[in-house]
Image (cartoon, rainbow, N blue to C red; front, top):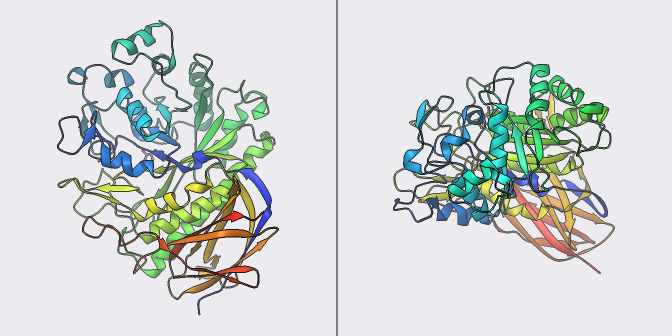
Length: 507
Ligand code: AHR
């Protein structure tokens, strides 16, 4: 029988603000993310503005993307930015050895990325090259991007057509240095992070937030090494610190790295293994935050989950190095689980970036390589429905749940939820992770009352449902009825569905 959870929301107990940047994105030179996804070039028949797809920008503006990380990922540590500026026809080519061993023509470079960020209204998160780059190269990139006067790099930028300096609020110091970014040991990288960060200068009075490349999954020793390497072991002010944030990566899969599982054809057992892998984010954020607390109880240094999402075996028939995968209701539920966890860790988690925005891994948008047609994925809709949590204060919630799902001795919660408030509005997110039956969910609102309540539900005929150009709304939000009963709100959530309930705080 389906369970009937009660969600207690304390409308009068607000915690820290959920940084809008936890709704951040990631676009790498990988497969069809940049080329074909964002960038089609000015000569394309696909409507574009200065080479960037209009439909992609229009769709993503709905999500109010707060920041976009680029150019990688693993690609960042073999990317040399000077190759991607100046007249396009003169730009040198390179081999993208990590992703498909294809030739990259550098037609999408710094100016095109900054143009894209402006179109999206997103902050730039530029990821520098430590693995195969130099300190000078990284330093000059920042000068090129953000310096106003007639310094050599500012002059070069102007010669390439951009007078005004751009704003780059976030800068990454390499990527996965324990793996594709150089196979380094933690202490060796920690020293490099200090050195490279030093030369990522603040120009024109700006204050860039430098992010040291952090751990994979449970590797708390890596986080410890980066905290130990900070002056005063992280207990100094944010300003004087060489880096202000430390990253973390966690991918969700039902299998393992050699057989991650199919995106669309999965058993019930694989579904629950996926849920378990997604729910593990709660443990990971706690583990790394606790380690950071040892050094930095005032939370001056931020945790940045700059890669997360599902990673499945590639769609049959597609290039194995391009990481193109379908996106089902299961992926949407994975996103819902992550966001609830992000909200609970709002005190330490300053940013998170889903991998990746278009055509790669857990994408928001998928484009057809032949027709160019675009669809919004189920995950897109979770981002849209949850957008109201950006910069809102997290509300204290408690989920009263009596029937967990048993998997290999683990008891997995079958619901996930969180709530926040901003400008007199309250947004509650709740997902039913059960695979069968409809559940009645009681919203036990305490310390206040909500008026003008409206709700949306996202689901599909099956948990494996997905959108294609012929059926773009197979998984799309629909209105959901919310009833009042004994001062409580009651809704009926179908199996494998995600809902948002919003309302105005009464007088
Ligand atoms: O997002 C795909 C890849 O996953 C990134 O390039 C890398 O950082 C990670 O291993």
